[in-house]
Length: 223
Image (cartoon, rainbow, N blue to C red; front, side, top):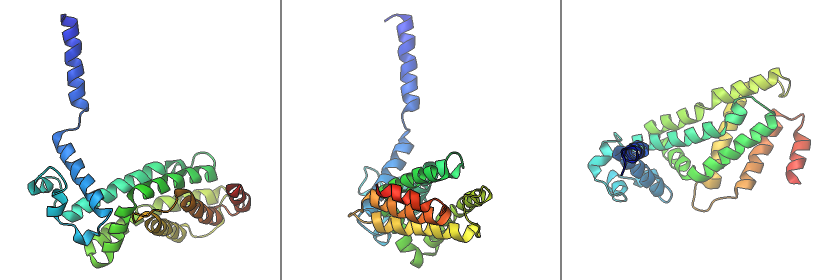
């Protein structure tokens, strides 16, 4: 092998090692995957570090290298869901383009995230009323979207696209409606059809925020 070929080979090896996830990242990912799998069929109250780690190739001690406790695991799982929702909602959150079209794009992404992670939403929501820490986590999760939705509503009101009303209470109502619908539709093994869930959410959001065009838009959805 020539010196040039050796140098190229070494560079490729270094790049491959840099791109590969670290052992710690692989362990954390395996624990999170096991948590998701468990919550697909069991409530949070049945989750223990023992039965969680039994589903992985790692020891109990490995769990505590990444999480303080099971509540920390749940927070991490919920943070992943939040990240997916925020990323998917950018078309509408950004305020660019057509309001209704960007809203539909964002709600489509929301339904996709809910379909994939509905069991996590259900697990946290079900456990929250009897668990102060999860109650705080759940309310913080819901509340994190209120300000940004209220801000977008206010911006559309200034543009004359949305009727005048107090944005924050409506933002809270819409966000909690979304959570309830996603949990009901996707929180169990038998999932609803994404198209029907999206249609229901779109009807409520459009009728609330863009009623001036609601009739024609909803009619187009039926076609």
